Length: 159
Image 1 (spheres, helix red, strand yellow):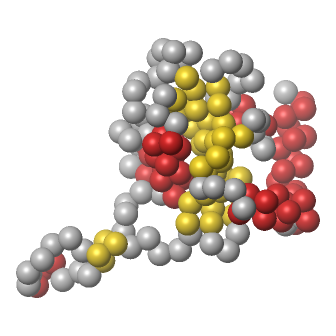
Image 2 (cartoon, one colour; image 1 turned 45 degrees about the vertical axis):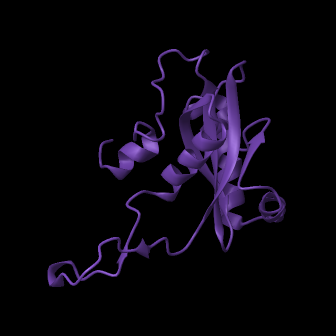
């Protein structure tokens, strides 16, 4: 595993210094859609840690999720002094939202895991690892929506 250690160190250095390569990469992602399929992972070492294999049936998608306030108007009407709240937070992480977006676009695939790859002023970018349902028979259907991915378990404090 010597190679993956050096790949990880190179990426950490790139993120820490906010290099020109990273900035150009993120600006090119800005021009793409919200969810787009990619041929190979940007950070190979992290993808392999989370279950990616360069084999038939495994796919990658890059998902852009908006940063900033995600509050929605409070759904209850009437005057209830005990429930005097104007807005509600979504109660799930941006990473989990990214996994759900990818699962909605690629309906024939199951979300295995995801990881952060970058961010700019308005968006956070995640790469989502997905597998064909036929290739991974052990993966239950609808993992992303039922909170069975790693990001969702962390959000529920069940690591």
